[in-house]
Length: 623
Image (cartoon, rainbow, N blue to C red; front, side):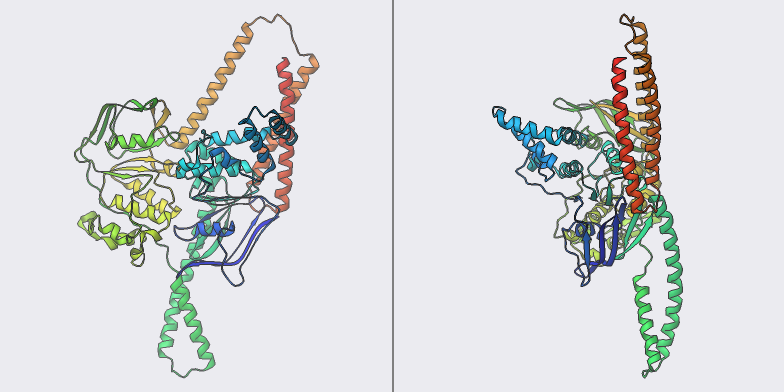
């Protein structure tokens, strides 16, 4: 079943062509990610698909299936400022959510018993009690706990999480998502990943989260120089197939260059009066010239800025503590940093990670203990908010305000324009005003302002937000070779796994644990610990049961015990089939009919599991 069809759609801003006569189809069950460099038009294409911007082109057409529910998560969602959090979530045309809204309003006036009874009856009729529970569950999952908080008091990150919660609660069939993992902590991201893997959901999203691309997506589309390139499979398949495409393009480009040179010689030697045959050859020459002009080897950020040497004493924390009122963020933490350390920081939002980073640089004072910074230690602090850059300043002015040139390795110097070129700001883009930059381009410019100060201790607080995959890869390579120390707070699990050697785990109530390993190892450790805890609790319960004398005798008959055993076997078989169906969904090349059949079977299997588990639980209670 086709959900979306785009044909001959274009979009330009001034002289800049974002995409040119592109075609796109999205079918039911597909999970598609759009990847491209910053400023290429990813968010614009999503807004066109969602109907928030008009498609350009004389023959352009956009067909979106009318009988499906669509959810769009914008990068900067907007809400009515006068609403509370709960009012914003309940603003929906979904009948179940409408019933919950009426019930919540009735709760505000308990003295109006007739209205309360009517609202409760409607909840019963529509079976909306599960929706009420789901709304609360999803909001708590995304750390939205103050339902009465006015929208006007929410931060940008809180609004993004609220918009995501509202969309999940509304249960759309087709989700259009622009950077859904921004402003989520790692637990939230893993929860969202599980939700989006549901086979009945169809996705078209922009994300730089490479674990999302690997585990969720079954097709990746690249927007490159205004054209779309399709790759079936996940992120690993994309890397392999893109490498093959680039090899083919390089080969074709070399052939075209040789032919271009040959044709250039011919055009230079040919007489002014040409035959029709000769004229067609000249036209072909100019077509070839345009082809070569448009083809280019992809630019890459070059980061080889000289770092200052670290001294023997780098950074030491001696029994430091910090609290704000009842909120205990850090308690009695001590650590001495060594050369070339790469530390990741993990923990839920609001647990004190950013405050801890500010304590390291003495931007925030400790309540107790000491922070000792080495004489040669130079911090480069990349903050979540970035630096305030004047909108009416040109890119080149932002850099020249810091320095006209910077020292490089081997005694060389680099001017500000040359440095900007290495960060993919060509001479024309250097004259662009900050107000015209995309979010990713601003992040790249901010990163450059940090690195050009030649730090030897990098503190990176969410450095991956809004950066494209190409930039992330180059940044990772630079950090792996960086001679100084690095501390990273990031929700990008792939980025963290690639860079860090150990973690500071913020467990809450001021406790910080030093874990030796990357994030994936830490999650495996957590799951193993949880499994061992559950086994230990089960063992304790069984021991208590054995030690408790049974004065009432067995409550289950022989036939009931047989039924319990039979149900356990049936549930196990159904769980195995559920896993098989989920695996089949990950296969590429499934037809819409196959997807529909698998979705139907999966729903039936889930219903049977739920039914048999309820029967088993009833018997277990008797036992």
